[in-house]
Amino acid sequence: MATETLIPLESNPEVMNKFLQKLGVPCKWNIVDVMGLDEEMLSWVPRPVLSVMLLFPVSEAYENHKQKEESEILSKGQEVSNNIFYMKQNISNACGTIALVHSVANNTDKIELSEGHMKKFLDEAKSLDAVARGALLEKSEEIINAHKELAQEGQTNTPSAEDPVNHHFITFIHKDGALYELDGRKAFPVNHGTTTADTLLEDAAKICKEFMARDPNEVRFTVIALAASD
Image 1: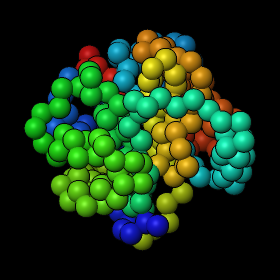
Image 2: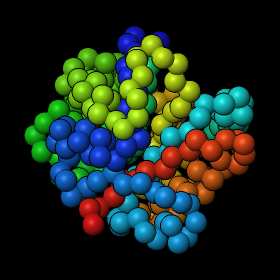
Image 3: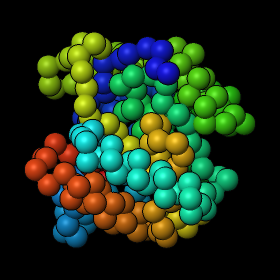
Image 4: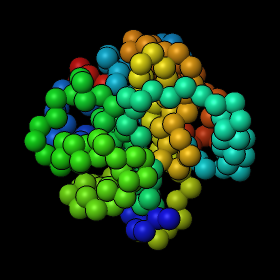
């Protein structure tokens, strides 16, 4: 159960980069906008790409697909790498922060974290399960306070924590040859098949298109990536 409600973090690369740098992520890695999902638009995104994040509307079509997908995975099973860092979302409107944590935590072999709040959290969370990691985040005042501070810095009118939010952030990462969707509101990570570090962006874009196709009348989708600085 969610124990606290935050103001959501805006899908604004400038704000998200401040958040990451405040927590110890070096500025050689940046959140960038993915302006389109066709081949030409994807070619503009700096490489390498470490993660892809999708902000999408939580619709009836999404919820129906989520239930169907979960049932199919439970009945058929799936392979999930033991090397994935996955955590549950306990805090309402913290999906942006959790998407960023998932992005960083699954790329610590490439991201040299400085001593700071993110490194401290990941060190403590490493040996925990997904539920315990979610509970640990609730107690991580430095990360929660960074979220609260930077949620006020977006370009849009800042909502209150009590305003209804019907958008949700998820993360796509490459791990051990597979493309994983990490969503703290789902029962487990979702394996979307094979990928590589070099094709993560293109393969994640295909799954993002599937989200969009399920809601053809909806335009409120945003795609961003954690990528090397230009």
